[in-house]
Image (cartoon, rainbow, N blue to C red; front, side, top):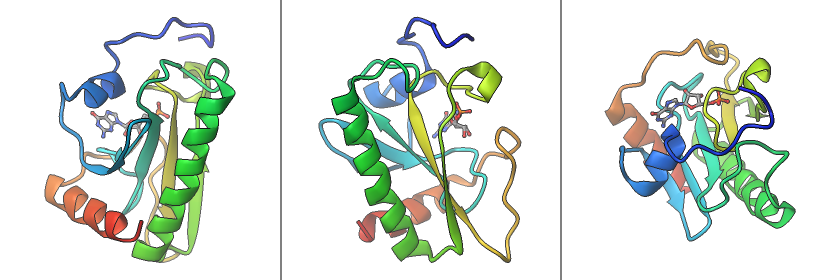
Length: 144
Ligand code: 5GP
């Protein structure tokens, strides 16, 4: 899918925002949703999205909306750090299928890195146990 793709309301994250499919939420307000990645690359891998900006990627979101997302990314990264005490935190964001993007609603990944635990590669992770996702989301939420 090219960088000039029209936003598709049927994408997975649009369905999550509408509540058409479930997600494990960490934080939500009128603009922002942070939720657990269902196929985490590490313990605590979560995603941050804008709820109303229909942008497929970083090129077509209004700057004011992007600023809200990146502020939330920092807030979530700090909470992940406090809750899970990783050795590092990777923040990732992909634009266009050739760059690795698979869901075409702009999103940021927050991926904690642990020296004593393997981190999966992007797109190569297995589905997580829903109870583990819920417990991790609650730990991060408590640290917000
Ligand atoms: P991208 O490849 O577009 O950068 O990232 C999309 C992310 O969405 C991937 O890390 C993938 O694991 C995650 N993902 C795919 N389907 C679902 C889903 O149904 N629910 C959740 N919570 N995450 C998903």
